[in-house]
Length: 139
Image 1 (cartoon, one colour):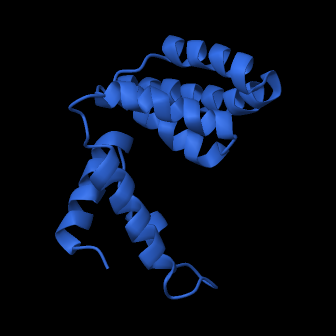
Image 2 (cartoon, rainbow, N blue to C red):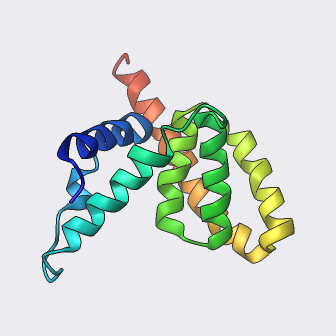
C-alpha cells in the first residue's frame, strides 16, 4: 500500500484542483471486493501525487487542458467532468475549452466531440449556477 502521508498529500492536491474532497468516492462500496479501496487509493495517489504536481515543464493550466482533450477524445465522460472542473479551477477559460473541442472534432471525430461537449456544457452551466448562488450570498 502507498505511504499514508503521500496519499494525504494527493488528496489535498485533488481538493485544491477539484474544489471538493474525494474521500466519499474512494471507499469500497457495497458489493465491491475488499481491495477496491486499494485500487482507488493507488490510482488517486498516482494521478494527484505523481502526475499533477509535475509543473516544472507543463504548468497545471496546460496539463489541465491536455487532460480535458484526452478524456474527451477517449469518450470517458464522467472523468471528463472532473477534468473540466480542474481546468476551469486552474485558469482555463470556457472559450479555450470550446477551441479544444473544435480540434477534437477534427481529429477524434465530430460525434465524439459532440458527445463529450454535452458534458462540458453541463459543467459550464453548473459553474454559472454556482456563481449566481455565490453572488446571491455575497461571496
